[in-house]
Image (cartoon, rainbow, N blue to C red; front, side):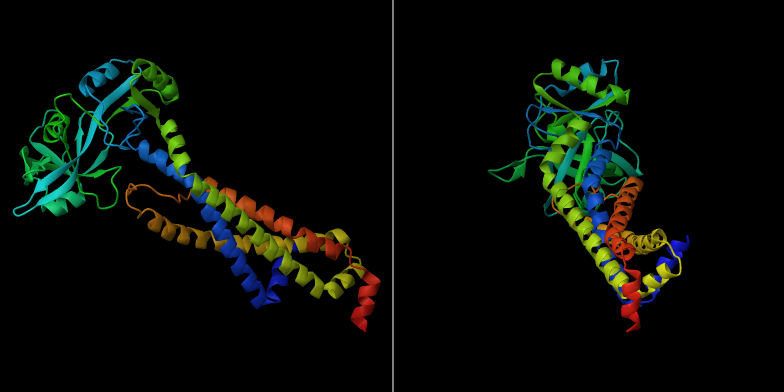
Length: 397
């Protein structure tokens, strides 16, 4: 404790220099924290997004990922019935994603349509009104953006039309539907106008009803520990489908965004190096300026170990104060950077690149403390080997 107080008093002797050094350490610490959050935040955010409704497995057409292409699988109802017969599976449901149009008095609005089974859906959370019920072929769910573009609310009636005839630019299929509720679709990008109906109705509007088509099937396994085993069994049972657990999808996602991880490692390493150089430079200058004081302390009986501990304590104080400022700065910059990156087109609005977590803060703090200790070793070594007699003689002349 005495060493820490000595370190704190030493820093206050040169307030401007100490302040500038703390600012530099805080910037480096903020960069380190942001890079640590970036490297682990992508995985955490993507996993939380996929498990938002507890469905751990996705079945899609062979060679595709969920909503990666416009490919669809056939006989969805038959496959879902087979899945639900598996005792290890708690729930399974189909999802069809397609382009659809909303009719206004003088124009059409392009929408994204979801066909779902309300009894087994993993795509949305209800914000207002009520949910669809199985077999409700006269109801519809809207995202806030769709409600705004259609000018409709809960209880209003809207008209959806299916694929347009390219020759006459008219729709051959249309349906008037009552808005049951407003929902937040988990995978929508910011401002995406989406609507949802029961699967048979959306298939009819998209002209996909003849082969009972769906974009993907979602599966909820009763026991999380059994997910890999159930996924392997489904791959054998449905060889024409792509079966991915959330863990598999996270691996695929990490491969696509590997450059973000590499960027975080490079910038994180640079911030550690900058922190070491800053602390070591400041401490070395401080020790050189106080050689006379150190020699005097040694001459009156202060041990070499005490002097070393005091120099190391000064480096620790510098690191702790700079790291505390850096964490605050890092959280603020991470929020701003996350807003910029998540504004890219096609990214789900619920996705985040920078996810602050306790283990992230702990990792950054440990790295910074080790960095401060390492940076103080050389100045401490200089202080320990100060020649007492020569230094006092030079100070006297």
